[in-house]
Length: 120
Figure 1 (cartoon, rainbow, N blue to C red):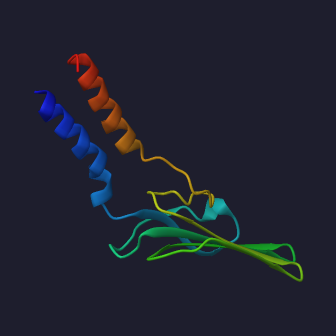
Figure 2 (cartoon, rainbow, N blue to C red; figure 1 turned 45 degrees about the vertical axis):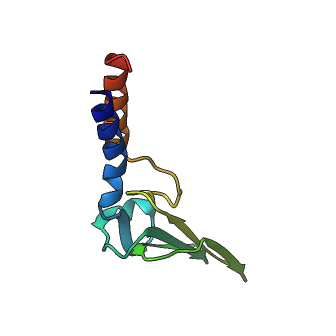
């Protein structure tokens, strides 16, 4: 029984990695609240990328799925641009690179609770 529960826990932790990545996507939005379209990425896409460019009182936001990403910041003659990257589902909500999958958390906590309840 103990081995079976440990196997289920390991499977649950790996469950999330088998799915395609999900990112928020948009092209040319002026504010983040206009850039919250959820998209299931292709299997080749391993990152969510957010580009933010601003200058002359305007801001343009683009979010997309990409196969690779390199964070960067640029500033020149009053124009600013940044690229942020992350690798978990819907992690590019605001350009931040940390977000937890609630499904993975729920399943993990449930199995740990089962192990504790079984006295393991």
